[in-house]
Length: 320
Ligand code: SF4
Image (cartoon, rainbow, N blue to C red; front, side, top):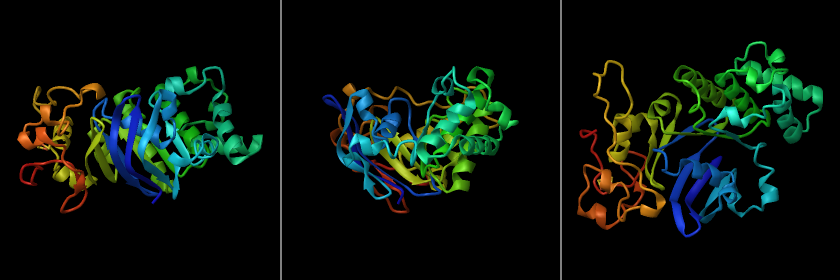
């Protein structure tokens, strides 16, 4: 297994915003990590890349095994050998990810020079190839451009090129299209998914958009208020969600031919870490909540038919 997260909990000061997270991702697979804002998705990305200290956080228990090495036990100096080289990150906002006063080519070249030890000419040739593979026209000429001369979609392709330039095994893409307009979003997501498959990379795609997940992912992990609700193979999950929160998220996807005003939302909001309710954290918003849900959190356990689930009263396929 390329990435195996086992029972991971994260603490920031006295609070625990992420509890008991377990994920598995192999080469050539695309895993979607979904949930509303505040569910702990970006925190998961920081934990996997060892960047929690940047926000005053730490792994309080569990492990993050990457290619057989527990990254949580590595000193910072060793972790640097993984970041950029073997684990690459695509950030939310390409407008701030790029240096505004450096030419595009130089920003991509430096990744291959630093992580692969390539000389100037070889790094530039690699950059031009990468930009072309990302369907950037006139790739050689674009290398001389500055970020402000490119559109938002083009800038995000450059950020993806930077992620690929170190020849990584795993890409973590955290809401990679949030800052882009909707038509460009679809192009970028499909391109990223295609590149990951063609190159046999693992891709952890963090998103709040179930529509994106349905289009490109192989499997899905649904996160709510710092705990996993459900993990399944993508086709099974959309055909018959077992967790009420998963079903609610799927209900938020706009569909062709929908009557105006018929799109359902999820009442209420994800609680902040300081106000996580006892029992199942989804119970204040769940239409199936009953006394056992308020009394004790449901265990996250294997379910018949595949996947893992945390719910006292799961949906049957006929309910979905
Ligand atoms: Fe709803 Fe209860 Fe399941 Fe939580 S455990 S999702 S409250 S039915």
